[in-house]
Length: 240
Image: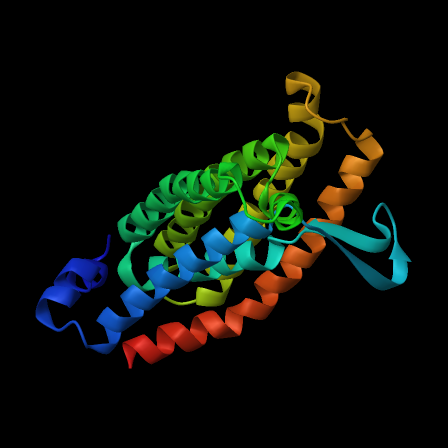
């Protein structure tokens, strides 16, 4: 961690002035990360179908992706801002504590699903909406812990080589690479590996798995490009 990051670590910021801009930003970014992560867990069961103006090779006329795609993209935005402002160790702590919190979210959701409901129809609808399959849970947890840690490590590896300039480069390169890993791991595990090994549901054909990977990654790459100005906005506002 750089001296600047060490001097502005969240523990020192909050001890000196909990209402300073860097301190409020640290709390806000951690809160944003956790909120987006929890939202991703409870929206992952819905599969979205986004129509395209023209059909693309491999993908076809529409992109299929989990409902958690946007919320999950926000977690990369928050972790990159944390890594830039407060250092690698802070970002990795947030990422790995967030991984543990995934299990808390799942335990709370599943305990609610298991509890008897007054209205059976409402309970059934609730279970359909919030009851992610074993395949989705396995894929999302493995993809999360691998891709988020890669994002933080790569972000700082690029920063160490290029210096403090070129924030856009480390933001785009780290997010684009980690999102590619996330997409490949999640889709492969959730729709191919887990169904084949665990026998839960049917495995998709390789062509369908490839279409899901390419389609999801294209959208995630677009989001990574669009969030770069907002990373500059947040970092600039905190450092003024």
